[in-house]
Image (tube, rainbow, N blue to C red; front, side):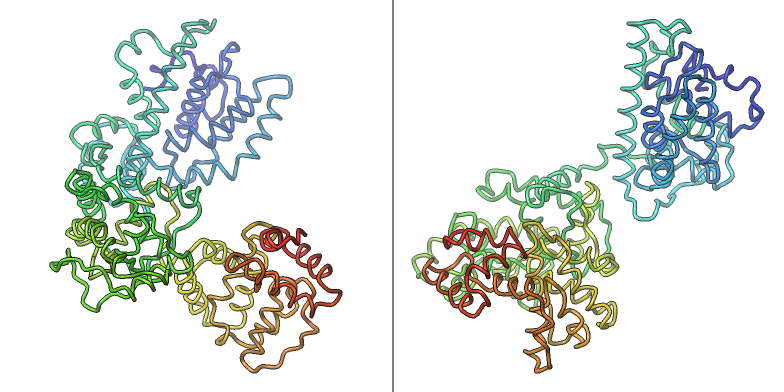
Length: 599
């Protein structure tokens, strides 16, 4: 019983005189609330833990969703207990706590019902209760648990998610118990310690297990640690999480934020993802051996890079050239690589052959290549192909000639590995369900070919209607507005097939202060009538700014391009610079600064 583990929480005093003292739901909630507040260091000098706004928010948003199973319909009891407890104190404490409860109410309900916050103990308590188990009876819990063999997981949750959350909860509870014991030992409270020496002598782990039982289901911790341990696998059962961590590092290196989504694969084949992930990590670990140097350690990077390309195939030669620090034109580094029709499920039996010089020129964007360059690349490319062939032996990666990538089943495995570390990794259906702003914000960071595919899918899912086009076009002008990414967002117009857009959507965009001139140009290119007078100055200035060569060519030719545009601009170059700066300060500085036209 929790009240015998955590002593001197004031539970009996709190329940005395309370009309709900005979309500087991209220009593259970009171045990948890008082116990957790006391563990977190609430002042107990009055005989009960004194709630403060900070402790109350932690209780509602962090501790209860981590440690306590609350049956459906009983959520409101816990804030009610907090309010009843706060009413025992003077000095406006009840009003302060009531305000904290109101502010945390939505977060509390969301956290308690979020499948991502489930631990094994909270999840099995939920299943047992749905089966009619008496959660206070350890024998009934054991019998019902035996009948749950092969119990389902919550929708959208993997076993690794529950394992990770459980491991975190174990650490947090052990730390809280240890701190509470040390705190009381250093400054003994008048009401007595929370934990007796005898309880601590049995081990913090056993104390924590007793609390978990009281807060979820009686005897559950012992069963999940013993005869039913297979129901609650721990970290040792998930060796593939090492690879998940490596992929997380790759994502953070590239995007810096797990909330920035990777592109959805065009196809995912369902499979035993945990088993496949373990197979993949075995191959990755083998590749770290000396025989696969120098590229064996790059396996996680290769997997991530292909997934980030929307699972479009990459070139062995191009990737080897990058590793050898050859110059690769950024304009071609994300171009998809053609894959022969017959793609093997395992490693190619034929030896790797570097593509001819003409193909290398196309892949690298470098015109002055010769046979000697191709010969220099042969060794590194074959070393890289050997790494890819070992990965291909899993059936999750393919290499066919110079092309390599993920099979649909492999795409599902990498998506799973990213997802268990919290990286936003939508599938195609989830991406189609995004709002226009969400789709545009994500596509800005993707390779052009992938952005084109996903945005086209988004429009098709809405019937390519004028309304869908209008929403997407409007998002191109508002997402990332005023930031350094505004120009890249406008650049997504180039990946849209505006020739297929309903003309009314383009006409409706003419007055848009960002993309109006683009809409005008699209209509004219189709031979549709368009009134330029409807297009505002800012949209015209952005159209001219985006058309200027910002990086390539000598400065003289780039300045000449600006002078040509300025000659046709009302008010000349000074007026054009002002308009560009007003429309997009960041892009104006980037493009005009090197030309000596500091805006």
